[in-house]
Image (cartoon, rainbow, N blue to C red; front, top):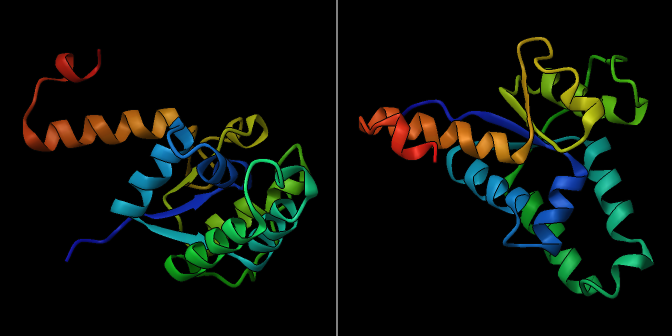
Length: 154
């Protein structure tokens, strides 16, 4: 059995998956779930719970739908304990994703956050926007299947 990549997904990308299930972030998450292993930490889950609990989301998604989303994520993701603190991001609130990636030995962080993207790569962890993640996955699959890169990059 081959090793599945260990993947961190930031809060905004996860929320995009919930609210816009056909969006690029949603597609990237679906691909990540199919081929990889999602990682979460206490800090990343706490932020997601707090953000999804905001009344501003009531008009887009029911509280029950948001709870179901959190439960589903909790079932498929691996909980990682953070033992090594990291202080490297311009926005200190984003350090929790770097901590999760390093402590969880992730290969990639999927995010649209420019403060995180500016750090690519970080200690051997790729930091990729959802669209770039999908593009790289598509190219790797084509190479494995022996298809022309010219055809798939259009």
